[in-house]
Length: 591
Image (cartoon, helix red, strand yellow):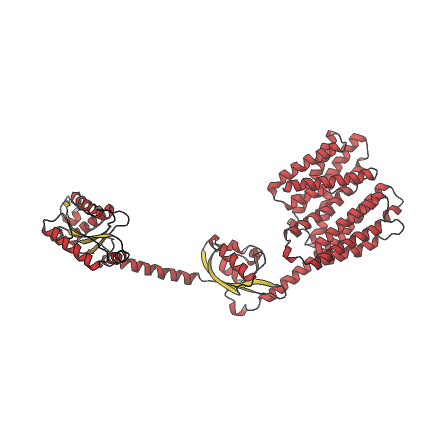
């Protein structure tokens, strides 16, 4: 889309210039086409430059062929024109970013010199080419090229850059019919005055253009100056080609009159744009001073916190020195950067929503906690308080304060972690790592109150006391840990095993499918009976250690609708004693 716009502007400009040239008997007026490419190279990202250069080379070559040039001359003209734009863009880009190029009055003289210097190499090149083709004086051709193309750069480049910035910053909600009408009237005054001065050749009234030009420059700043100079260039060029205007009174050739007219337009530019830049600098300084004074209120009692103001683009407009103490970044580097650049992605929507509500007046203030990663990569916890208010005549805006609450937050997190750990420890058996009696019966009561179909199984180790008596309690502990791990590995999701005392364990099994709970219990009994538990020499005192086979006895009871957990436990306990009294290593079901 941008390349199509460039093609349209370039072609239209070139066609108008050729139309003026033919109408004027072969004289060239201001050549804007190369200035259009220069402006695009300054405004647009570098990755698009190659496309713009190729598009312009092709258009220029085709245009020159259409204008009757030979292929060689058309190619030379195309290369010279694009080369001129590349040189101009390279020189101007060294001065300042494009959208700030004309905000500093010190840049304007350097910009004018860059425009002239950029024309010199292609002017010499084309002077030599034309001398070789037609024998014309190379320096006259070079001088005409510099004058024609230099004025084009001086006039059109600022106009396009200023209009681009105005379009970028344009907000329809800020348009006021009265202000729009005044702007149109002022530009109309410039056009009318220029037509009056150049539409007749009786009186030399060119001085009248200066006050007409200053009015939009003072009121509209750079856009007014650039637009006015463009209007003057168009109207003055037309009438000069028609043979009227103050320059028609000069006893010189038509070509010399055109050159003087071009110098006149360039002079208007060099008068208007510096004034606009100085006025912008004054306004910017006044705005910064007012904003600084407005934001100094309250610093005395909040000196340890970061005070800020956010502009209408949601960027930092003001930060006090505490910002650097908290983030490790300079205040100067942060001003103008989006606030969201400092906040984690997950908080962006919440922050934008809060700003929208504040600006709409739906809420007077908003507080939230977020995080900032400081310059050292350390995550800091930040407490924000946002407020809608007025700033010293600048209208409504967003201000606020944020403070570093990292230390407090970390202490709170540690306390919560300790509380969670303590709660977990209170429900965990320290020997086996299984849930303890308390955790098990809390789960049992919760599931039964919810109406789940459950089976409760109790089991303990057969003849466990013999292990403790023969090898000591460390060996017995090792056996308990082995049984706990073996039983846990056989359970499915949703099933639970806990150590509820000594060598006694409890199982909580889903009983939704007939026979599933019994199958689980029997599988567990068989698995443990088939396993060999290895006790190390350190536990048994024997040179090679000992391998034991353990069995378990188990009682299982199924829950009934409305049954209490204590009743279910009692049923399973009776079934367990029945299994032990019936020979052990078996499962018994509650009656």
